[in-house]
Length: 315
Image (cartoon, rainbow, N blue to C red; front, side, top):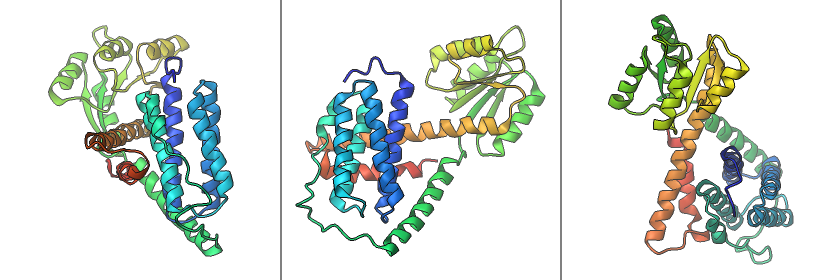
């Protein structure tokens, strides 16, 4: 597989489809739901199509074979063998895309035979489907409540107006994050050295002493490229937006800042942090298994599932 011609946004989108599929599979463990079952097939179909666009033929074939298996399996409760198989497919695809290493696809097991399942396929009943819908609703609400929890998000804010710094700090800390305020670029740099890296830096474009936000972002991008930087300005134009994005801005917003628009970006950044943390946990689990000389494929899905469920524990 050649990842050179695929932009990072497309890879992130593919990973997010896999993550959504994994969440659906875990929900189906609690009880069958026809719409969720169809959603898995839909996601696999979308993955197959997107992988085909990028000539990821091996990955597209895996998605196609898994989709075909589910068609033959039929709309019914997932037994343990099928659940573990589907999770193994999704986990290894995520590892393949996240680490840009096609060798993970070789670890995906063959699907269990429909004729030789160790557990009988249970009949679908109205009561089990109703229980599944209730459980799915509960899980979904809990999942998104955690996703929207912005407590602990660390933001550095640079603006030469002390009144705006105070207003920003008050409004943003009302929704959960912690804000550190700076009036000068030198103060911001000192804060980075003394207090460590934040999760996000928000910068006004027009600063005192001839400094500006775009050039500040450019200089910071060379030092800390992994930290998102949002620029805002009262005088936006297409030229300013394009220049800011080209020099490393995560987003460019209109001044005065609207808290709901900022919150939208904060949620995306928090989700990115979640993804990086739980993928790191999965990597550590798999590395531990490999160090013991064991095969981290089909029979080790339970360990991987535990790592993935850590998603809901990161604050």
